[in-house]
Image (tube, rainbow, N blue to C red; front, side, top):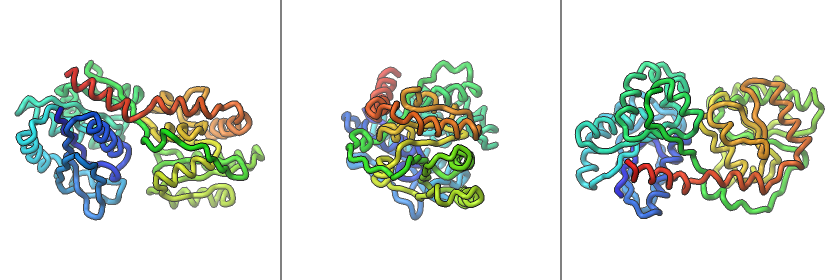
Length: 373
């Protein structure tokens, strides 16, 4: 099967969707399919190409590695990408168009179906779904988004939670499916050489953005230290626009000796850090799926997350706890519970649960859809 993946960002550029496109392309190729990728080339940022896959590029424009200049990038991808895709289709006899994000890739899929009757599917990743995304542009474009979904051969959400939000825009569409993200293969066989810190330690990994609820986490952790008198440490990995604000909150709460900001970590260093700590916590305000919870569980860590988006689909009572969004005391109590009941969380059970979420499984589910349509 000849599959064209269209995405305006791909690993290591962008977030979870770029990583998903990269890993699914790799799995499709390993299963014997011919894969072609249309994406953006950004000045100063280099994509990691997979051997044996043909890449096609149009210009893209970014503020930084994680943030696009949306109007410029989307315009370039739609206009230049459309004509490039027509050429790709004619040269390579493409069977399936796989559009990551409704906008901008889904627009190209929609146009090519009208002109060439090509089958296309759309993978929803959160920021392209009205009401999950709070961007006025996305909400204003609801009629176009509904049209793209309606004409597609399948719309795939990364979680049931995101699917329910998508149905607010297109409740009559019966062409939805759910396929969860997978974790990187490097997390599948974590060795047992754990060297932990001298006191109970939590790790939080995310982009330092308001949506991740890290300000709430700092306030909750402060209560854990000063109100409950529990000795513990919190390590926060990642970078982003809220970094300075979070550092100020840490200082104001007198948590300098208890909270450490690690900055951006490569995957290799992240795995080493996960093997040093006792538990993982991330009280997100929005989260379409939450693959970082799976990665933490693959390292045997009990996890604490919010009752939002796709997170409740990942966490059960055997692997961790769920809390309401922005409930400081509830989060404090959850962390205290993890500490006081740590021995009840079985590492092997947690790892086994994490291994339900793999890219190979996701790729097989996508390929079944490709064959079905």
